[in-house]
Image (cartoon, rainbow over all chains, first blue to last red; front, side, top):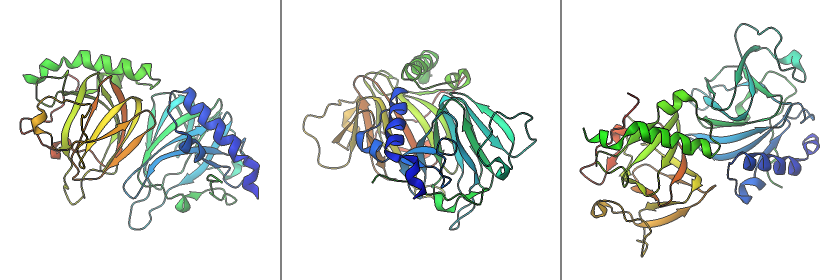
Length: 179
Length: 179
């Protein structure tokens, strides 16, 4: 299986250590439940994300996202589903520098060079440091990259990852939960 | 004005310092916008709260709450409003120990002794340390206290404080924003 290449146990442990080093308390049960995904591309060092989900129900969702140095969360959007307008999310950077790409005038010389960049369409670069945040409406293509790694809090409406639409047709958003 | 007794500028600065000391980045604009409330009771050392609101719209809300040592957020509940079921909230402790009181079997010898305790009805004590969290449904009376101070993240549906129902009839939930 492609997902085994992500070595999820090691990634979970590494993500928990990064969170705790930043002063974010993580219980042992939470550390064991951190989601690890390589988006089905088999190159977690380039396209990958670790997620600690605090709460996710039909009313709201909150999580921490850990990007290891060099990782990108690939371009996607959140469509309407089940009578809702689709997921709205607020990304708030806790640690590190995040390059967030949104639709708009393409930034010349963008910092990020994602794996399979030919499938990316949003190239307007926003630079977010600790304490900076940005809210992304539904149906808005977005992706982000952390050259030196980052911790990002996400506050949002319900996360229903199975409805996410990735631009790259090879992406399958399946996270490996705890074994 | 009663609210002036809370010395909101000093409380704002103190809250920002506590957040930053815990590794939570706070921009200067955010620090200046921290909400300070004594719930109209004029005794912020006993009944009071400081709030850094990250986002609050009709879809979700996220904030950090700072309790100074000895402060209590008085008993209240969140009723339905404007066709919604009312506010649901998840409290997650970031730092310190929080004593959360909910309906249920009263705890003998509770830690908290709130100001105007005769107006409190929920006495089932839950002890939450860093990394612990609890989700409170609408219409559920709750209050919390931090003997040595605490930082609590709140993830929730929209906050509409003007609809909150406090048990103590003297409470007026008016926060002092920035001058």
